[in-house]
Structure formats: C-alpha cells, structure tokens
Amino acid sequence: MMKGAKANVVEAIGNTPIVKLNHIGKDLNCEIYVKLEYMNPGGSTKDRIGAYMLDRAVEEGDLKPGGTIIEGTSGNTGVGLAMWAAVHGYKCIFVLADKQSKEKIDNLRAFGAKVVVCPTNVEPEDPRSYYSVSKKLSETIPNSFYVNQYDNLHNRNTHYTWTAPEMYEQTQGDFDVFMAAVGTGGTISGCGRYFKEKMDKVEIIGVDCVGSIIAGYHKTGEMGQAHSYVLEGVGEDFIPENYDFDLIDDFEVVNDKESFLMTRKLLKEEGIYAGGSAGAVIEGALKYAKKQTTKKKILILLHDSGNRYASKIYNDDWMSDGGYLDSSFNVQISEVLN
Ligand code: PMP
Image (cartoon, rainbow, N blue to C red; front, side, top):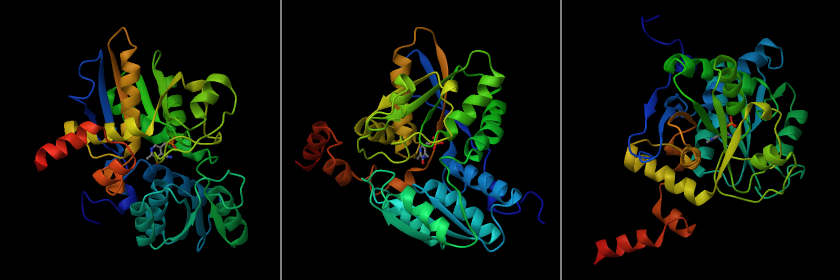
C-alpha cells in the first residue's frame, strides 16, 4: 500500500472545507460560512450517508454478499450508494421521480445501476410513486435491501457521528447558528443533535421550500397540502422518520426562483459551483440574517455540486423558459446584441 493513499474512493469521503462568503450578505449583520460538501468524491454530502447506511446494513445483517441495493433517490444518495456498491461489489437499482435532472440519471446508469423513472406528481401512496415502486421492488427481488433514507435512522446518525463532529472540530464550535436545507431531515436532525449537545446557545435553522409541508408542520403540527415545485432535494410531501423537530428552532422558507437566482449568484460572486439547494439555504440565511439585531456567525452546509444542474439552473434557456430570469437579464442580452 502506497504511503499517503486511501485504500479506496469511499475512504476519501469527508474532510470537506469550510469557506467564508465575502460578497453575498456582506451588508448584513452576520458572517456566513459554507461547508462545501460537493468536494466529496461523488459530489455531495450523500456520499456520507450512502457509505454509513450500507456499512451498518452489512454489520446488522440486512445486506448480504451478492445482494441488490434498492433505493428511491433524487440522485445524490444514489451516487453515494453506487460508489460504495462499486467498491464492495454489490448491484444497485434506483427509483427516481421524473423531475430529476438528466445528469443525475445518466450518472447513476454510468455506475452500472439500473434506474427506474416514475411520475413526480402523484401521491406517495399511489402505486406509481417512487416510494411505492421502490418498496414493491424490494419485496419482489430476492436478497435485496431497501435502504429507505427517509425512515432509516442511520441517515441522521451519519451526520451525528461524522459530519457534525467534523464541523465542530474544524470550527472549534465558533459559530452561533447552523443552517441546512431540509429533505429527509437527516442533515438538520443529525447535525442539530450533535451541536445542541456540545454547545449551549447554538440555533438550528432549517430551510424549506414553498410547496413542501415540512416548515408548516413544524409551526402548526398539521400536515398541510403539498404543491409541486422544481427545486430538487429540498422539501417533502410527507414527514420522514429522520426528523427530530424538537432540535430545530425555526425554518426559513424560499421559492424556486429566489433559490435558482441565488445559486447562480453564488458562482458569479463567490466562485462556488453548487446545486440549487445551496441557493435555497443561502437565500434562507439572508432572510434570517435580516431579522437579527446582534452579529452572528452562520455555518451552512451546502449539499451538492453544480455539475448536476448544468442543463437546468446554469442554462439560460432553461431559466428563461421557467420564468426565473428577470426582464433585466433580457435587457442585458439585447444591449449586447445591439
Ligand atoms: N440538498 C440536496 C441537493 C439534497 O439532495 C438533499 C437530500 N434530499 C438535501 C438538500 C436535504 O438533506 P436531508 O435529506 O439530509 O434533509
């Protein structure tokens, strides 16, 4: 074994840097720091949960040699699982909703995984939904393991035992607020629990999107009506088991357009090439920062890389067609053309 080398790519997950934002939000009474989880080998923080959940599944006897790993995933978790499966020699089947980007689907197929695409706008209980299809496949295929990142508590345990201690060590706990965009609830609940145990005054703030029911449920305890939205990876239309709402102090809610515009601004002004949920959480952080009367250091986890959104958020035609670009953008184009 060569000195200084990692035994395999899974061993290269983690130790991602934390970087200060120097332009975005500089007029506000807060400092914003972001953890670049896109620097993981598979391009997202989901590399961590993929490896951790599968290591536990082997340990606990749920995943056996020659087995098939099945998951309903928006893509990032699929990459994390597929990477672990490639290293350890397992097969994978992924079930995706059809709103997911083509890059994500192509990427999973390139790992040798089988990908099943299901309609987005159906209820979770509908037999065509990606939740129902994943469950059905796992019941039908012998020697298979349904990972279920929504209700598998090793999702939040990953962040409790790995991501959060890493951030705490990097910063020595020198922050006042931790923020993350929420989906399964694993990141916010796992990190939230660790930080609340370690620090007296830390605030844990989730960022949800318009159309999701999570923030509304936290506020009222009632399951509201979900509406469709375009942002990937953020929000849910049900409450996954990984949520621990007692740890979350508050939520900020953002919409598709402001998230996409902020994602692009993050690249233009800070050189950070991240996915749409990064724009969402930073937009949420600015909303939070505007309400603060004392200066705070905000630590934010950015989940994934911009690569997977090259044909969407970073494509002007897609942005224009979706109505996400302001008229000022078109004015600029015509000014260049004339
Ligand atoms: N951003 C992206 C891009 C994601 O894929 C996810 C996972 N759904 C999240 C944010 C939310 O993270 P979590 O599932 O841990 O709440």
